[in-house]
Length: 240
Ligand SMILES: [Zn+2]
Image (cartoon, rainbow, N blue to C red):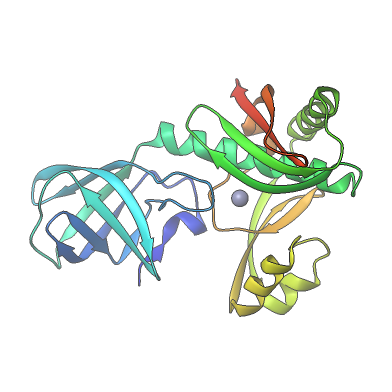
C-alpha cells in the first residue's frame, strides 16, 4: 500500500520517502508524488535520488493499492530514504489539460441532454482529446462548447478536493453520470470528489490545477466523427 501524496496535493514537486520494496528496476515506496497512468492521464516521469545516485523514473503504474516505479537502473536494497522529484512541466501540463476536460464535460453536461455525454478522454503533454456520444454534432456546436468552456476558465473558479463517504457522494446530483460510475462509487469507502466551485463535481483520481484560470485558453484543434453518435474533439491550451 502506497500513500498517494498526489491525491492530497497535486503541487508537490519533490518529497522524501522510504523505499519499501525493490525488484531490480521496479521500486515501491511508503509514499509517492508520482502519478501512475490511469483515467486518461499519463504517468509522471522524474528522478529518484538514492544512495548518492540519480535514477530516472521512466514508467509509473498502479497495482492494487500500490504504485510501482520503473527506473533506468537497478537498486537492490530496501529501507533507505530516497528523494523523489517529478518532471513538473510534464505534470503541470497534465493538470491543466485534465482540468480543461472537466470544464468541457461540465459545459456539455449542464446543457442537459441537448448536446450529449462524454464517453472518454486522453491527455498528452501538449494536447488532449475528448470523445462524446452526441445526437447532433457540428463544428459550430464544438466551437460553442469551447467558447463556453473558456468563459468558465476566465471566471476563475476555485477547484477543491474533498473526501466523503459513498452515500454523501451519491447524494450530489450529477456526480456520477453513468450507471457503472454509480456502481463503482457504491463500492468505495472514501470517495475523492473534485469540485469546480459553482460549476461541477466529479468522483475522480487525477491531478488538477487549483483554479480554472490556470488552464489558460482552450483552442479547438480538430473535430472527428468516429461513428454515427461517437464524436471526438481535440484541444490545445495556450497561455495562462
Ligand atoms: Zn479529473
